[in-house]
Amino acid sequence: MPNTCPACSTALRPIVLEGVAVAHCGDCGGTWLPGHRLDVVLDALVPDASWLDDLLTRAHGAQDSNRRCPSCDGSMETLLWPDTEVSVDRCPSGCGAWVDAGELDRIAAHRVDVVVQKPASELLKAIAREVEQVAEGQEPPSMAVSEIADLLRLLGRRVFVQVPVVAAGANAGSQHG
Image 1 (tube, rainbow, N blue to C red):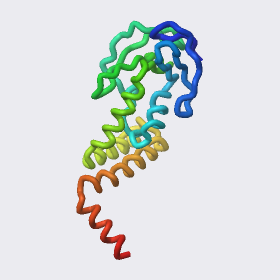
Image 2: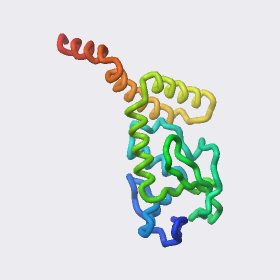
Image 3: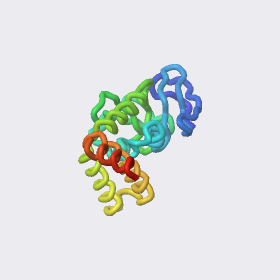
C-alpha cells in the first residue's frame, strides 16, 4: 500500500471503502484507489451505473499533473470526469487514481443523475455498444453480461417511466391474472 499523499505529503493509512482496500489521507481527505479500484468502488456505490464508460481506460485529453504517484513515484496526469467539473489524477502506468476530498461523492452523484435521466433509447444504444465491445474483443464477455443485465434492468424501469401506457397495461394485466 502506498505511504505518501500526493496532495499534501502526509502519510496515507489503509482503509476499506465499499469492500475495497484503498489508502486515505486523514489530513486532506483524499483517497488513493490502486489499479482499477475506482471503478469497483463506483460500481458498489451506484450499481445501476456499472455500464458507464471507465474513465481511467478510455480517457482522452489528459493534462500533466504536479502530483506524484504514491505507488511508483512517477508523474501523474489529470483527467476531467466527463460532464462534471471533477478532476481525477491517475498514474499513466496503471498504478491507480487519486481523488481529492468529496470528489468520489460528486462522481457517484453524477452517475446517479445519468442513470435517472438516460432515456430508453440511450440505454438501448449502450447495450449495443457493450455487445460491440465483446465482438471486437475490447471487453471480456463475463464483464459485459453483468453490464448488459444492469442496462436491461434500467431499461425496464425507464420504459415504465417514459411510456405510462406500458405501465398501465402491465398493471391491468396483473389485475386480471
